[in-house]
Image 1 (spheres, rainbow, N blue to C red):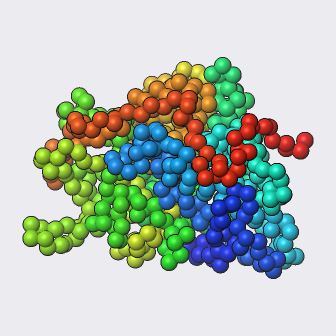
Image 2 (cartoon, one colour):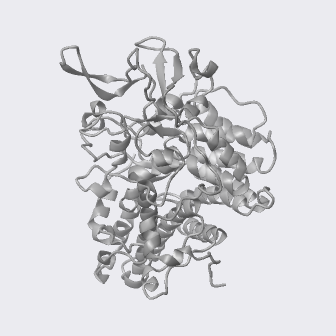
Image 3 (cartoon, one colour):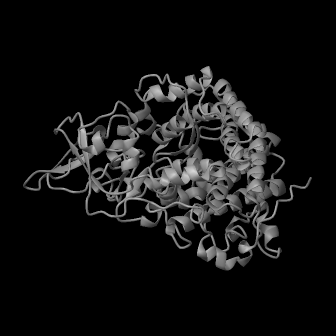
Length: 561
């Protein structure tokens, strides 16, 4: 677990990273142009890079991460809010779109500012190792932000110096291939300059960067595909980096999947990269996403605004055995990830306190038992459990409204196992490769499922990823990776998902053993319509209007030879 003090010290450097003007894409905020005296020693340098793990990502993590990563991907749906993302109709004025775009370029700008300030102001007491470490952290974060930008928006401008941009003639978008090359170079620098063990709990390491390189090369294999055939050189690189992390990092899967999301789980031995949140009165450094996704204030702290959020019908259909005869016959699943990710009526979570009321309105508390819908209900929700940690008393007093302490995952060892399996599968229809199957089964069997003995296919790996990383903001980017080399299959997956309302009924309460699922008849908007015209997100209207040059055709980036 993590020493939260390390990242609280980053608040001392808040003036480096707080406040953002509307021109954030073109220049860093004025209050980031710091006094040269700040970078006097190693401790100050590390304090300056700490905000890159939290506050700069704030606008993305709060809502946009799951609105794009899960609602748009179809793993989760929302009945009344975020309908543009649920129905795959995200526009240039959609809130999540604007928040994501803004956050990504804030990360880029602040990473650039830190790199420039270190090169300009680092004092003689700052060791070269710590200086390179902080620059590697900044380039790691910049690469991560650009991976989201290019995945969502296609060609985007590559910016290495926001100050120089002030004197330029305008922003120019760079080609998708250029952006992915830029991302790769940043991660390679990070891998070469970060240590094998974190300098402080929660800091990224060589293994974090190599894990991101494995993900990047798997994606680039599709970006540079020819005739739908992924580039073998990049598949081989993805396998190589995944194997390096698996063999060298010392990371292990947690034995119990649910423990990944039971507080305090931060910086556990499965984690390779997390955004670091702390319980503090400073809004920018606390996890506010929990407020957005928790289904009721009965298990929260004056918030709990996710009552209309829940697993989609399509998501639940992926759990083997759960939806039987189109939901008419009671079903159940052995997959332990369901209970750790979403709540079905009767699921018991003793670690979370729940306020309940008797017929007279008298309140008492119990360990959470997710309630069943009324007998006459024609709608209910398989509400979100992942990242929901309960009331302040459930986390040692470390929570209040919109102030939660738990981290959000960005990269876990489980993904590295599945990247290895997919890289080995490559362009084949299936594989029986011993290591690929072994690594797949480490993830599969950890969920309480029997060993997978059939040849592995792309669909097997994709569905395993969806169940493993539901509500971690990754599903959309899996579809983007597919879309690079097989767009029609990506459209078919999205367009065949059921994204509508339904009601879940247990066979008994308490302690149900099976559930039925009935689609809500009056709810019409059950499907999306993904196509080449709406797969990429449009640049937010406010940004496009301020930078008309973003409408020009993209050009290759000049890497300087």
